[in-house]
Length: 229
Image 1 (cartoon, rainbow, N blue to C red):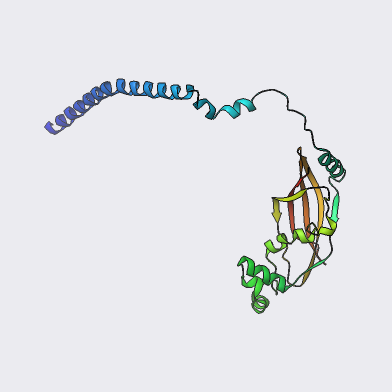
Image 2 (cartoon, rainbow, N blue to C red):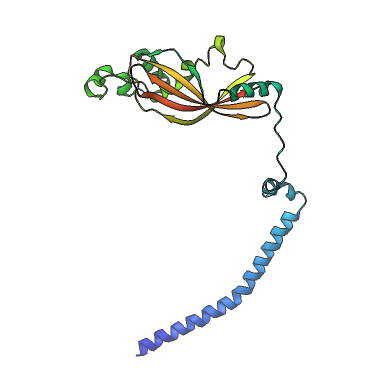
C-alpha cells in the first residue's frame, strides 16, 4: 500500500508542477507570438518590401478587367489564316527512308546506347523475338525532321517565318519496332495552332509508318514555334 500511495503522491506532484509550468510559460508564449506578429506586419508595411509582395501577381490575375484583343503582326496574321484552313487535315506525306544497320550503329555510337538488340546481329538472330536488330525508339523519333522534310532548305514549309524552333513534344509512343533494313515514312496532320503577337505555336501529329505494315513505328505530337517580324 505504501508503494501505491507513493506513486499516487508523485503523480499529484507532477500534475501540480506541470500546471505551474504552464501558468508560467503561457504569458511568455503570448508575448513572443505578439512580438513576431508585429515584426512581420511592420516588415510587410515597409515601403521597399512592398515591391516583393508574393501576392501581387494573384491580385492582378483576380481582376475582372476584360482581356485585351490579340493584335498580330501582318506576317503572323497571314500565316495564321493559312494554317486555320489546314486544321485537322493531312499536311504532309513523306518519301520512304531506309533505316539500315549503319544508321543504327551511328546512333548507338553517338548516344552510347549499344545494346545487343540494336547492334549485335548474330545474337539478335538467336535471342531476339524479332530475329534481327531493331532501331532505337529515339532514333525513330530523331528522324522526324528528316522524314517530314522540315530541314530541307529547298522545301521550307514556312518560308515567311523568320525562325522555326522545336518547342517540344506533347505525346510520344512507339507501337512497333523498326527492324534493320526497313523503309519508313512520315505522315503529318495539323491538330492545333496558338497565335501570339509575333509567333504561332503549331502542334502536329506525326505518324511514322513502316512499309508493308499496318502498325506505325512511332506516333508523336510535335510542337513548333514560328517567329515572324
